[in-house]
Image 1 (cartoon, each protein chain N blue to C red):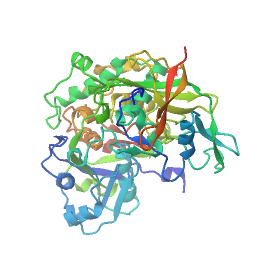
Image 2: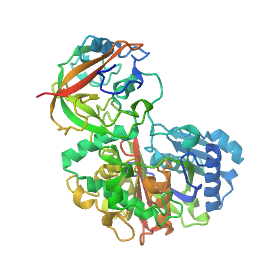
Image 3: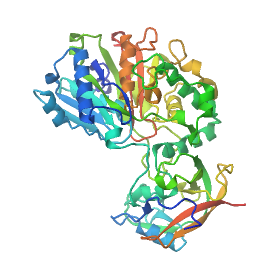
Image 4: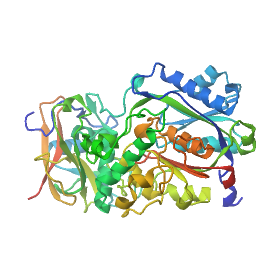
Length: 395
Length: 147
């Protein structure tokens, strides 16, 4: 069997997407598990399928909504696939899609839900330090020095990247301004009607240099779900199918070395994934019409976009300006729903849904004639993942 | 303790229950800085692991390294994410590399003015910060710019 026959390209499609209302952390009236069910029911309704016909679940970041309980609650006839991508943060968002596609492409399952549910009010916040009395293992070498939150963990990488390539603060600011700009047209966005401008950004407090408050993602409650089916069934549903052209995951040599010891340090961790991503999709960065690029922190977006080939590492100060990043006419419209910064922090799965919406022509910040729609998931954690969605014209 | 860089109350570091890194904490109490070195191939590695990432030998020692390193990256933290740091104000965390030791790196605080301008590449010297009255006692390794 040749290499070319071993591809996921075009073997599966997203035929339904669903989201709950997105809430500020702690404000969901529903428990986390109920949020998961609501998003899955919404995605099934969007696809026009019975939830009882779902036969698989894929998620990431140790999602607490157990597939057996989901299948029970939904009355699924035949649970065939239950899958979790190891690794924290949003690095698994596109990996969960890769796994769902793998399952339906190989006949393990017929109808897989990719989902993420998160009630930070119910279960605690990511942005807080450890509350234990003692710490051991890798954390013993960082926590007692006051290095314990995701922002603190990643600021160190971004500072080194900015140092190496002379990147200035306005490059980070542009990413935040674009997200907030897009959120103003998106009634689902938590930051809808809460615009951001340069002055407000500059006046905002530092969380940890080089991240101002507005360089950091939100903390939310909600859930999101997508329905993945084999390509041969893709046209049996209500919406035009959105095909998966590529979905890959991984991390580079010793990316997981503890105490900040990975040899290639100042990176979003996509360098080994990107060649596989484009090889599978049979396209390159110039073909991408619109991008959703996970923002835990703006610095991760910047390095991710460099690593995906949209901008040279020494060109960031020119490339990263708001006009280049906004729909409909920017050079590369990015985070067109408002994303993790201004729509909702649903661990990035809302970005995959927005990528689908762009191909359907249903985004609140629609780019014209979108055929190739990319998602970058969870920069700076390990492993990370990326995905590319395509219209029927791309097959 | 009054001469600690950060306010008291953060989680206290203790050796891993599986015994992997007890020699590091013992050495720090004795004002020595150690990292893992492979007795087979000579590679240095940090953080601690059960086998050598180069040759996979499990014959690893904790060997002394010089008390001088170089700032590889840094950050000035403003927002406290732990109640113990509520009144702390800004503080600096540095990532210190050891170019003579396979570029292994360690994390600590940069002593001195928390508003100081930090230069990546600056030479820094280790300062042992003992917390002997804590239960259990421990020692942190902090850094000061060499003049």
